[in-house]
Figure (tube, one colour):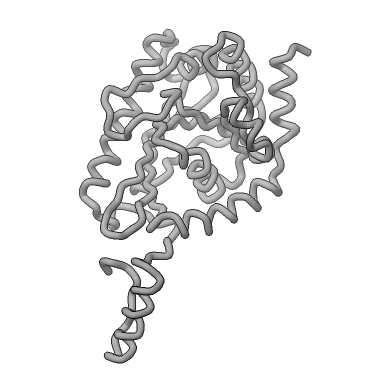
Length: 265
């Protein structure tokens, strides 16, 4: 067994469904403390074919993305095992993330690219597995255009006939409350077998355009600030400040009014 094959097998062995469930339950509370709400743009997760490997590819806004994705995985696709790459230096700092599906990749090296492809292909050969990728390869503003990818995702798509690929857009805008919103939207699935043998350059262009279109759709909804366009997965603990909120609560009680900690009801 080669070193890269061993890395793929290690990722499968390390995954703990029990720890994944425990960690994502904690994330429910963590996001409730940190965000006004977690919202999924309607119509939500599209219908996906059963029995086929799934690849979700998203834009990469910032630090929150991996744990936001883990939260969504647990809520929307609990029957799948979810995996994603992470820089091996970062994984050395947060080793427990191996147990919830993150596997190490050496960035900016040819060996790292080969390692990623070997591990990804091995994982996608397993039943009920979803692979989550951020093909931009670095943090990028959600409104930056054009969207550009590194070659890994296109290489993976062009050499596999089975995966179904789904574009995923992410934003963390501020609306009416002190804390931001965590927003996500899903584009239409792309079946690799139906793409007529696209080359890597064609795959790259096709997938970049699919994600950019979904990011534009989410951007329009984020700008509109209309919560009715979204399904709410997690409701945050809205407040202005503990002292000021206590005074507002007492004032409302004296007037016989209902108290809401939100800036805007």
